[in-house]
Image 1 (cartoon, helix red, strand yellow):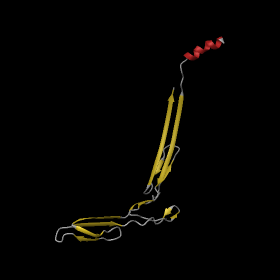
Image 2 (cartoon, rainbow, N blue to C red):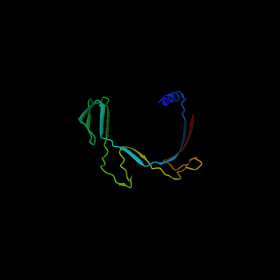
Image 3 (cartoon, rainbow, N blue to C red):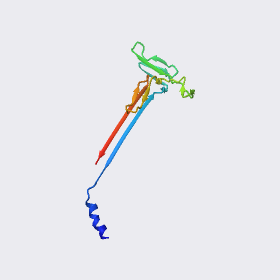
Image 4 (tube, rainbow, N blue to C red):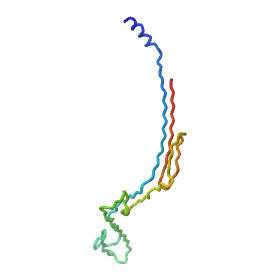
Length: 153
């Protein structure tokens, strides 16, 4: 028991030794080809009318015309009538192999054509230098190499 008690102060007073060796190597290549896309927003009916010195006999509306007259003959008047007819709702579309061959295009639409891989390519090599080759329109390529060495003592 005395021997253990005599050795305990040596462990408490000895300097701390910390050692670390760390090595990280990461190689990666990412190749992307954009797919075709259609975003379409269906627009609804709207109707507007405004004017001065005008009598309304029948108010118009979306898809129908109104009947109007002048209040005071010989006096100035102004009149404006605007009508928008809603898009017809599409309840189904045909999809073949993930492609809509004839997409429905509503009143507000954005269409993006699919990318073309062309010569898009990437290579990881033993030298650790990734190479990427540009493709056609709608493609992107990223090559990455990370080397980290940390020695702490």
